[in-house]
Structure formats: structure tokens, C-alpha cells
Figure 1 (cartoon, rainbow over the protein chains, first blue to last red):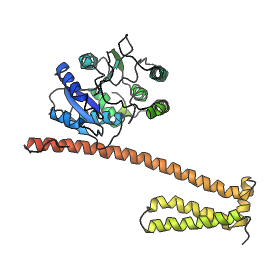
Figure 2 (cartoon, one colour; figure 1 turned 120 degrees about the vertical axis):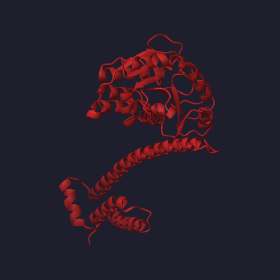
Figure 3 (cartoon, helix red, strand yellow; figure 1 turned 180 degrees about the vertical axis):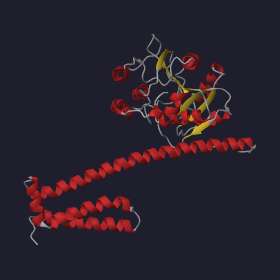
Figure 4 (cartoon, helix red, strand yellow; figure 1 turned 90 degrees about the horizontal axis):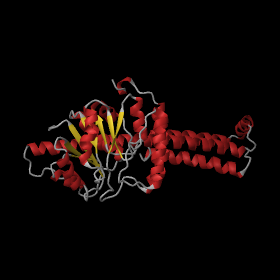
Length: 240
Length: 127
């Protein structure tokens, strides 16, 4: 079943409006990659639409959270022997044209994880002010914790090398895979590279981040960042 | 038997009643033995404190508490806190197990779809 060594993992929750277009765009921009949709308990036709296009779907019977959906994708990638896994949003925010730029540094061994960043260079993407403040905060948290300057800690457009995926398949945040994940990976010896990407406004559907979550988010991520810093990685979690 | 206040009598009787309710729930298999333990231990201790005034007095004095009823509430609250922490731990573990099972189901489902497709099964891919 594995045709290529790159797997594009698309977590989706009720994305029937935008998923078909996203799948088409990824196929056109990256014919050298396989696709996987992780349907995180959608109530609409998300899974059927993906299957109808020949894309394998792992469907959570109930909603588990975006982090859990990604982890499901990583486990699939590891089990099937993919060398690189890319996470890409179903809602059309992430331009598949950038896939190559994201994958290349990992393939060339320049880093373990690339992060498609909105803020390295000026892009058209506009962020709500409060969210922007949160991003600055968690950028600072990551820098304080592991001395890595990452502008866009919340970017959901990333590529992971095999070793990083193996670790993520075992241990991954269930809800927000942001600053705490980056700290945990850095503590385990994985290196990052930020790649400037263009991002668009989401096309349809709803965001994973609801109002209730926006209150919980800073608390959770602060605590989880601290814990990621306090946990000593075991030998098998460490990058060889 | 000497009681210090009506509140002590009420508390003691309520504790006994609660033990009986908990035991009955276990009998009817509505509550598992595991979860009943902390309930039984806490209510029995509160009942003992309620019915044994000398013990309650001594304990109140030893802990430096001014009013005997506070000692009973102190233990009651302590057990309630322990119970809530215990339940939070259980819930967290259940959440993890729930995630693992849901994921396992997703993988099995995909595997079934693939096997069906390989056999040319007519209704492949039905969710």
C-alpha cells in the first residue's frame, strides 16, 4: 500500500465543505506523497468524501482532539514505514505548494521537524490580536525552556522525520500540539527548522479552537510546557 | 451515651445511613467494591467520631480545634477531597484508555475496509 515515503496526514473534523478541494490540491502539488485522512469523529460526510477519492481514512468513532488525531496519523506512518510525515489542515489554510519546502530540510537531514511559519517573513495571513499575544507568549516560553527561537509555535503545518514520528506516536499532547510538544521534542534532542509559508484564511467549516478552549488553552499549555521541561526523557525517547 | 449537640447526633446517624446505602448499592451491583471502599471507610470513621464523644473530645483537643463539630467536618472534608482526587485520577486513566480503544477501532476498521476491497466485496467503504 505504501507507494511513496512521504505521508501527508490530514486531521479533519466536520470538514466536508473544504476537504475535497484540499485533497485535490495536495494531490496536484505533491504527487510524490501519500495521503491519510484522520477523521476525528465527524458527524458529516468527511470520511465518505475522502474514501470516495481513494484516500485511506482512519475514523475515530468519537471526537478525541486534534492532537490525538495527529498521533493516530503518526502511528499509521510509523507502522507503514514512512520516512516523513506532514501534518496539514483540512480547512485549506495550508497551501500544499509549500509541501516541498517543508519536506526538503527533513529529507536532507538538516533538521528533524520543520515548522511552516507565518511570521518569519511578512505574509498575508492576519491573526486576531489576542491570539497573536498568546503566540508571542508561547514563543517566549519555548525560548526560555530550550533556547530555540520559534516564531510560530502554533503552526499546524509541520513535517516530521521518522525518529520524531516514532516518539510522537508514543507520546503526544491530546489537544493542543504546540509549545509543550516542541519543548518535549527539543528536550529529546530533536532539531527544528522554521520555513516561511503563506497561510490563508480558512475556507469553510469550524476551527478546532472554540471560545471555551481559548480560556483553557493558556493554562493547559503553560502547565504542559513546565511538565515537558521537568520530565527527563528516557533513553529510548531520545534522538540517537 | 452523651452527645454534645443535636448536630452530632444528626451527623452520626447520617453517616450510618450512608454506610447502609453504600453497602446496598454494592449488593445491587450498582457500585463496585473498589469504589465503595473509600466511602465505607470515611462514613464509618465519621460515625465512630459521632457516637464516641470521649474520642471526639480527645481528638479535637489533640488537633487544637476549638469546637468538636469542626473535627467531624474536618474528617468529612478530608475524605471528600481524597475521593475527588481519586475520581480525577480514575477519569484521567479512563480518558487515556478510551483514546487507545477509539484509535484501535479506527485501525481495525481501515484494515477491514482494505481486506474487503481486496476480496472485491461489494459494500466496501461503508461507514
